[in-house]
Amino acid sequence: MSGNPAAVAVLGGGSWGTAFAVLAARRGAAVRLVCRAEAQAARVARDRVNPAYLPGVRLPEGVEVTHMGDPGAAAGAGLVVAAVPSRSVAEVAAGLRGRLAPGTGVLSLTKGLDPGSGRRLSEVWAQALGAGVPFALLSGPNHAEEVAEGQPTAAVVAGEVALARAVQSLLNGPTFRVYVNDDLVGVELCAAAKNVVAIAAGMSDGLGFGDNAKAALITRGLAEMTRLGRASGARGGTFRGLAGMGDLVATCTSHHSRNRRAGELIATGMPAADVEGRLGQVAEGLWTVGRLLELAGRAGVELPISAEVAAAVDGKPVEECMRDLMARAPAVEE
Image 1: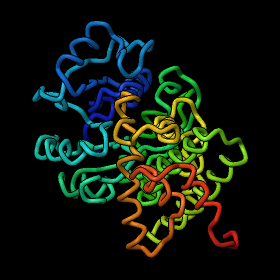
Image 2 (image 1 turned 180 degrees about the vertical axis):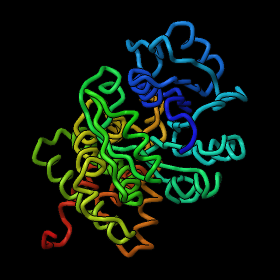
Image 3 (image 1 turned 90 degrees about the vertical axis):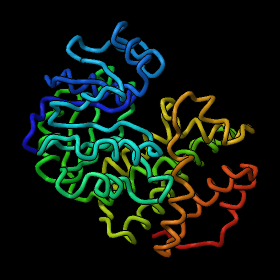
């Protein structure tokens, strides 16, 4: 990455994009937060708070705020950070084609698969920008609210080596520790699949089940995530690390988790189509589960928890989903 890594443009003014902008600014970067809508950008720039997504957290004074329609939104940035929903990645990536200065790196914060094609998001970015643009993915147990509050956490960054190390150097600090991981496929699949398992954990919560049920779902969910990863060429160890087990535990148990909450709402009878309207934010697992099962089918891998989540999203009563999971044929633990 030959651009200035301390000049950062964050595309996406949701909770994680805003929290990342706060984190990078605290680490000394010159940050531009790029909101989706001009009205949102004007409000955030004026009040120095993003009340819709991260209330109570003030932006450092050095953070500039603009919007996606600004032709100079990414100008001068050595690092462009994409914090947009999976369904928007293809459009945002295409919009950056030919607009990045040579050497500018792209860091993705999105955890999912492309809903249109089922491809990993790194593949979408590579097709849009070409192989010459350095790309990396940041993942791990990183709830935006806790990161913005300065609570300690850790993450992994995977992708082009020089960019990954530049991101590590930029973000490492007293409250945020970054590890480099060279298994991009594994980190991406962890990030996508853990959201689906978190929906199952939320369904368990919604049915009033206890810690035993949730621990079993987390453990068996990790097993099916790992099976898919290995069949896709990833390393099994990645799934035991921060992007796998770490993020899975956080997403399945936290009150901050939108995917866990989505499962809880579905279990209480809310149609899946209405869930994001209630949440006011994206629950990526709802967009990922069908494509994840297609990927597993091509790899010849069984994902029983994910299959029941998909059935529940399609309207199957959650009680039946849980009963059918428990009624599967006896098996040997891997």
